[in-house]
Length: 210
Image 1: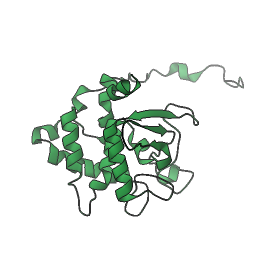
Image 2: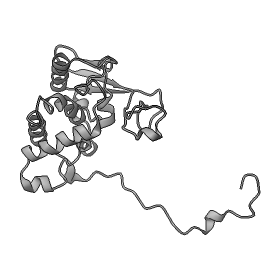
Image 3: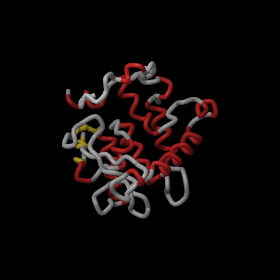
Image 4: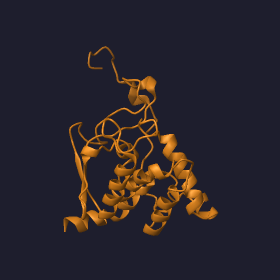
């Protein structure tokens, strides 16, 4: 059309319209604070050789700091301000979404990208409660960090795969919930841990700023 090689725009004849989408959060997936604590505790009992225990802080970041899974797995020590007491801060500027290697510029299944819906150089400061500060400090002492500073890593030192933390999460739901709750969409995906803030706002962060 720009080169004027077509007499008319053929797309005008297409009757299909994109389906309407909604940005609202399904309240059925949102856990309350008690359920969140029960899930985080249940995670530590999943798997052999501390498989779930290694990932508990990862899920805690999704709940307390409302990080997306791809942001949590890419969290580095240099992104964290973790004082001995009081509130801390995360400075999020990297996301590590999992991609099919055939569509990636590298052979790494976790491509390093900027934050979703933001410019590549944008950062997002996130105040974190003393409880999450304590959890992260313990994680670093107990498991150390990867060579590039990542706080969360597999036993082999690589980025935690989505299949790995999803399997742990599903097993934790079986331990923490009743059969009826398991059949319900309540916290069915780790991503849903951050949805409470979409409904209620970041209460802890607001208190911190106040």
